[in-house]
Image 1 (spheres, rainbow, N blue to C red):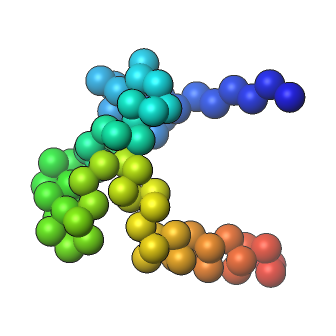
Image 2: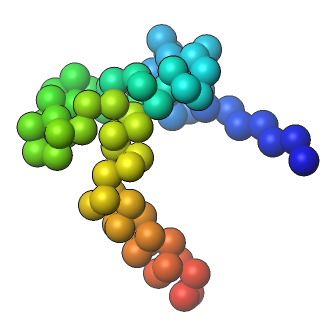
Length: 74
């Protein structure tokens, strides 16, 4: 099954042509709407420096799972 995704809406323009491997290693500010200041705060609070760090963070994963479960219960 072929899957296509338009990541342009969630990425900073400079990262739109990067591979998934490059995106995982990209700074959190590669995500559209995450400023350098936001990235600094994430690094200070949770030691999150890359998109991969953010996606693997246990707190963010737990929050996502809770939101998904709550949505499925509706």
